[in-house]
Image (cartoon, rainbow, N blue to C red; front, side, top):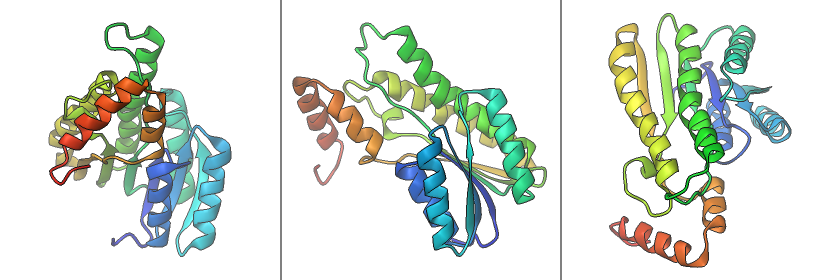
Length: 217
């Protein structure tokens, strides 16, 4: 990766894919603003990555589902770094819900973080990329395939995919590259999802998942 001295914001940087991306960017020589709602683990991840170098990292607590917080966090990050080249928007949440009776709180929480959070962070990045840049949103295979016991999460990630494709056509004129990464499948959040499933649902989910992998799973 040609990222030496690039200025990058990583959301969801406290754990999992976000923490791994943070370490990789700093190892490539980038300067990274790590953001997460989890202040303790986020700060520790930034400190550890920065200590390893050769790039640098610092932490800003941010709730991506809060537009005002996103705008303030991005302003602070860009002010400290002196610009913004890349946004890796990785923050996201998951919760199992029965599809025939999805609680309003679950529906609101999932879509606010996964969908609104994407729109808020992307918009904030756009305002700080007057000469162009790169925005990488994290979707999911769940937004492409019909997964058992995962419809609400999948719907939220399908919205992320649609947003990314549509905005790419608009913001390309400003030299902003828009892409979505669809990770699959072992992450800490995914393991928590599996642990929450009843035994019969877990067996059905694992069977359906394995059938989607050509070499088996």
